Amino acid sequence: MPRLAFALCAALVAACGDAATSADAGIDPRCAACGADEICVQVLDGTCTSLGPSCVPRVAGCEADTCSAACDQAYCTGVASSTCQAAPCTTDLVGAYHCYGP
Image 1 (cartoon, rainbow, N blue to C red):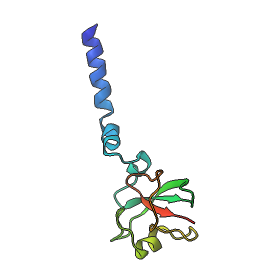
Image 2 (image 1 turned 90 degrees about the horizontal axis):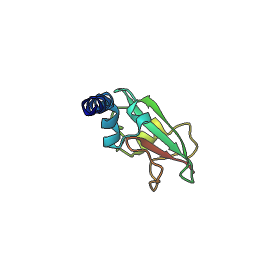
Image 3 (image 1 turned 180 degrees about the vertical axis):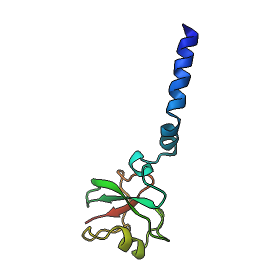
């Protein structure tokens, strides 16, 4: 019986390897789902409530850690007065470009 339990545990760990890697890196699974040519963009309102992340086409020079007027134009358009240039929120998703609203 102990051998069977060990084999079952080993199989479960192996099956969850990819998911554990993303979780270990701290990247939100919704952001980890974005393709290589996409970036995860999280929109937050003025009270740090997340309006959700989405995968959008990546713009050259505007990676997740690059906050600039050009990147705001690329990723935060369509959200009134939204900008990356604000104080971080506790609801910020790891691995996302953040667009903070009014």
